[in-house]
Amino acid sequence: MIEYSERIAAIEQHLSQWEFPAEPTNLYDPLRYFIAIGGKRIRPLFTVLSAELYNIPLQESLSGASALELFHNFTLIHDDIMDKAPVRRGLTTVHEKWDTNIAILSGDVLMIHAFQALTSYDADIFKRLSLMLNQTAIEVCIGQQMDMDFERIDSVTEADYIEMIRLKTSVLLGCACAFGGIIGGASDSSIKSLYEFGENLGIAFQIQDDILDAFGDSAKVGKQIGGDILSDKKTILYTTFQSTASATEKEEFLRLSAAANNEKISGIKALYEASGVLEYCTKKQQAYQERAMNHLAQVECMQPKQNLFTLAEFITKRSH
Amino acid sequence: MIEYSERIAAIEQHLSQWEFPAEPTNLYDPLRYFIAIGGKRIRPLFTVLSAELYNIPLQESLSGASALELFHNFTLIHDDIMDKAPVRRGLTTVHEKWDTNIAILSGDVLMIHAFQALTSYDADIFKRLSLMLNQTAIEVCIGQQMDMDFERIDSVTEADYIEMIRLKTSVLLGCACAFGGIIGGASDSSIKSLYEFGENLGIAFQIQDDILDAFGDSAKVGKQIGGDILSDKKTILYTTFQSTASATEKEEFLRLSAAANNEKISGIKALYEASGVLEYCTKKQQAYQERAMNHLAQVECMQPKQNLFTLAEFITKRSH
Image 1 (cartoon, each protein chain N blue to C red):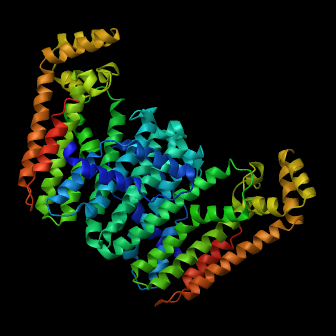
Image 2 (image 1 turned 30 degrees about the vertical axis):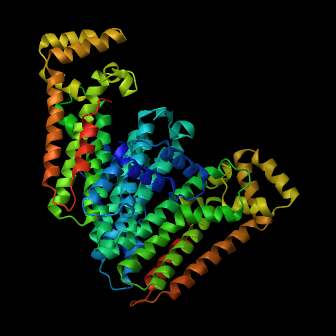
Image 3 (image 1 turned 180 degrees about the vertical axis):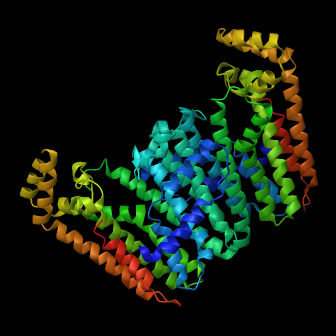
């Protein structure tokens, strides 16, 4: 994403200079550590680029952009506790490096700092941003709960799955794009279109993520292929297969589920291809991406939308 | 608190009709359960009474009042996880009745609903309330971290202890009183005085709590006396003793610390009395209460302050 490197650098600098109190160190050191680990900073980048459609200089959109990145990091710290994840982005997670209590509390205070980041805006803008972040944040929690519930449920439909990823991850991308419109003084209908652009793009992104986990190139994706298959995760591939496969295909799936790792991965992948599940999901992914682009096309603004189109293409057509 | 029963009833009704989504049940059932357990609703009552100083009808102060009660309940749900507490107000805690993951996530979403409760106010008031709640919420987290840190530290000074209780519990009472002033359109100096009234009252209340745990009447307090002594908790009595006692008194304290429960409680209580610690702490408590009353006296408003004075007396001069 070389063309956005200046904006990413500004976002990184803004985050690194975040004025967390020095003490208590057990509360704030974990946050300084976790936020410095990095990440792609996709959400703040979408806020910044959306605001640019309305000639808003970077310095004015950075607070809103950072609020979303702080909020996102809060969700990661707490999700890592719930998932008992030892590693995030190649480094030890907060609850492992410190302890669970510290991860709970530093996550809590990080969420508050996210809300506080919005107070740099005038009262009217502040209220609109807060309303949207409140609603989005509630939906993200609902999505996380659905995701945890799915682990204990036998039959998860495709619609359930799409709704879960919409809430857990996509609404925050919708919020990021809408933030740019709100900061830029866009019309209500354009703010809505920006939101729906981000939301649909988020769903497309997540479906792509599921497909790449099974069918990506290990070297490019940067991790072992087939992790979701091995852990019987209820991805879009899995849920589609369960609702469309024939009895024979399902029997074969059951047999493969109990097979050795390599056979399980290659066998189930072959089944996803032969049964048309891979093709179906790929088309689904493209449909969400097209829908996203159509919403973006509806946005009325002052500057060309090329940067947003390019970034959207980049994150959904990626091969890793 | 019979004279406030109508307001308490209105607060209870407002909370019980809170529009949490019906699903996911694993996210929202814990909140419906926990909020219905009740509590004294002290914080919202202070907001309502403070707003009445400016002729604000109950219906207008209830959202701000409820925001603080929701926020307070969020802190209790997460604190109970951190403290591994099995029981709260006589009923099973959320993490025990459901599980830790559900308690983390339902606490998270409750905090967001607390912030969302403020959105019923106009943009200017909304921003002022949000700023104050943000700052207060951050301080509450810092106080909770200090409290956890104190368990691992040998020497906690009286000043450290007062600062911890100020942050962990008193600032929220300050915030509750200031909320009434903000909603009522009070001057900045009166909002500040209301805040300092609540903050000092909160410290007096917490010191009283420590004293009653050791010297209260078991039947009135409703629990076994001496729990803090048995668990070697670093209360105001403990920290004062450690910084003022003679070498002989400290030796005696050490001996009693290892004694059987009854001897430990009665012996250490006797030591607190003989060494002047009880008297010192009682005076300290009175000093904070007087300071609180002086701040309340400074508040400029339209209605008499008798209700606030009475409630303040009631909660700090209680014997249970």
